Image 1 (cartoon, rainbow, N blue to C red):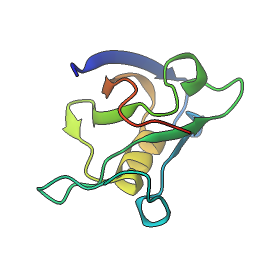
Image 2: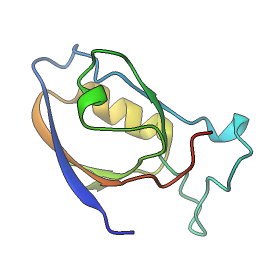
Image 3: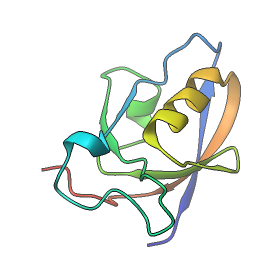
Length: 99
């Protein structure tokens, strides 16, 4: 599937995007690691009323944030928390079934 570029805007670094990633240590539905060893950054849920709710869906895979490849859900969450202003993400829609 082709990646789609999505934009988001966080007014401050303290503003939460409102996204929760699938924890690869506790999810056995699919293989969550690439052959290169990168852990897939799959959206598990978005918080109601959050920035993420309008642009991301459960099952979407974030492959990069601001051009930087997502190497793990923890690294992606850390990167997203640090951002302020408008930024872009490359997303593959419905990369993993959510139920």
